[in-house]
Length: 250
Picture 1 (tube, rainbow, N blue to C red):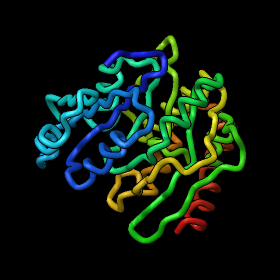
Picture 2: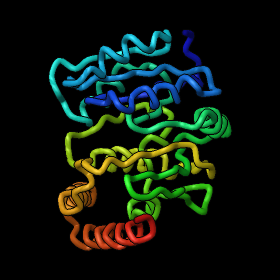
Picture 3: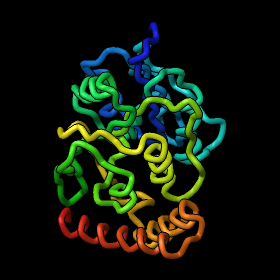
Picture 4: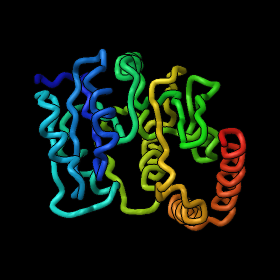
């Protein structure tokens, strides 16, 4: 495949994803935007995910990588980022799926001058499902840090900054990664269409609310260098909007 300045490198970590990986990969194959390359990074799965993917998907635009040992989500995504050479990057978790027009809509936004693009998404748990939307065409860093809109990581597409960004091995590493993107690009363009189906697993580590709250507080201390006024100001917003989200989408 010839790489153009509009080719999208897609990073997909995989760990014991046999039940959902086909759905995720097929949603990439179904994209109307043809210029992409998918990097599936197997994080030492103990099920047959790896063999299944290798046998089922033969598209030349798919590269399957394998960690020598289990490394966790952060470093597994970094393996994909280091392998990808494409100028645009997107993430897709192995239990989520894209709508066919997802990449087309986002690349069109990049063509118009945007560097960081997200979208609305359909949020589904074992007990409920909702469309998660934002009323504006942009999401600012301030609104992001206040958690006024909960970004779906599988909706993210961005142009690689000259100095690359990698994930840090911390709880809520996705939040810290997005914070770095907002710092570089100041805002994210929001495609006001539901382009992702996001499935939240009931046993996900991030579902442990006490642990998640501690992780978030620790990240705010890193971001604001232990300035207690800013740390607890944004932590208050995090708690407030977390409660609102839970009440609205339970």
